[in-house]
Image (cartoon, rainbow, N blue to C red; front, side, top):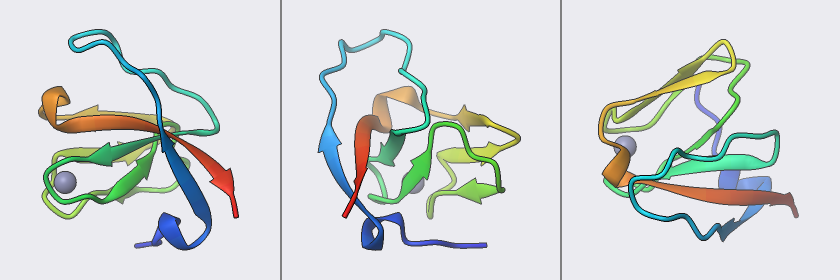
Length: 77
Ligand SMILES: [Zn+2]
């Protein structure tokens, strides 16, 4: 199932030191730098980005390359 979260949320970049663990939370999302797709940091439905870097389900996201992930905060439009 594919949902374009950008239609629902406005995303703001979170300052995040390189190499540090990514933040998680109900309002935190991960933007894939490779394909620009956005995935929830606590996905309750199976979700993945276009290029396969991010795979989420069961409240967790598997990340292949963390260097290509940008954490963002989502606010309802
Ligand atoms: Zn991607």
